[in-house]
Length: 108
Image (cartoon, one colour):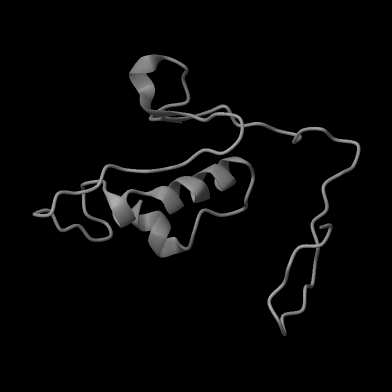
């Protein structure tokens, strides 16, 4: 099965094809560190996220039945845990020109 299945009536505008001479990606992200200052000392480290080769699953502990969370609450659980924010942040670090719209940047 060489071709990806497509939804009917949707025209593909661009196709991404892996380079046949590569056996692995050009770049692997092994770890992401969020620092309060550009310094490798642990004292400036806010968060360290280790990634593994292959599939990485972002998850957060489920909230208790009593706890009702919504987007932008301080606690982390389910839909408000920051999974999309993490992916956007990683794309930004890898060179995407902007990190969300101005409202999102202000909130973060």
